[in-house]
Image 1 (cartoon, helix red, strand yellow):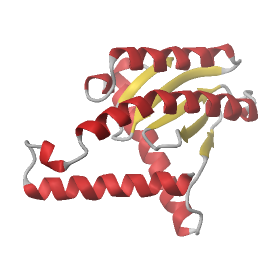
Image 2: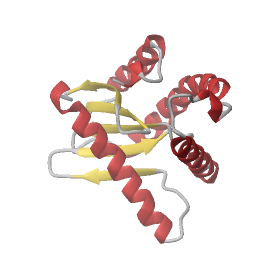
Image 3: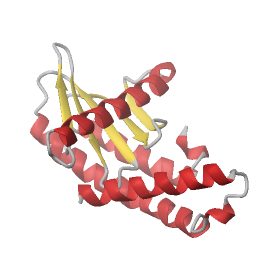
Image 4: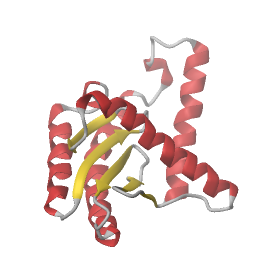
Length: 173
């Protein structure tokens, strides 16, 4: 779980509580929240534990590849992706900082407009929780010299990745 890497147990519990509140809406079958590396933060509902990691990677992959398509079409970002199948509808979106993605699996009758509104509210709250972690990380990693375990090449790459994520988050706003 992502909590061992970047989130405190309290933050993970707060996110899990938010996810569980989604089940007040009719038709929700399962929910998974994924971090920006594709690792699961939490899941609930009919998500099998042994499938959680593969599902998390898939959710992130779908969103990232969808964003690439939209960028090629001249749209700087996507707000959400809805996939409709015979037996399930899936809503995928990201919190504004791009540090967490949510996939909500619903029955075919579910009103996706309601899911979109509820999900955006949950994503805003997840963003607020993750912002605390980002601020702590920024204080610790404000200079790559503190990343003593990295080689000089890895430090350079870390700076490039951090800059890319920051630019992508700014485009989304």
